[in-house]
Image (cartoon, rainbow, N blue to C red; front, side, top):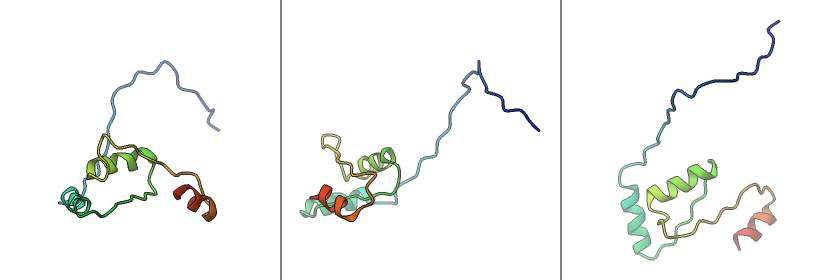
Length: 84
């Protein structure tokens, strides 16, 4: 049976990441909708950080706008209360 060992005194060698690309013309389409007076809400089942990044890169949110997060709620009444 192998013994569990805690790694220590390790050196960080590098990092990699995967970037999801938005579909063509998403930002342009969102801007047209917003310019037409249509309010846009974004709901994501992804991590909060990813959702915020997508909101920025797609043009749903500008850097000067504040984000409002509703997370860790499962009760419909609590969710509706937070939205209102």
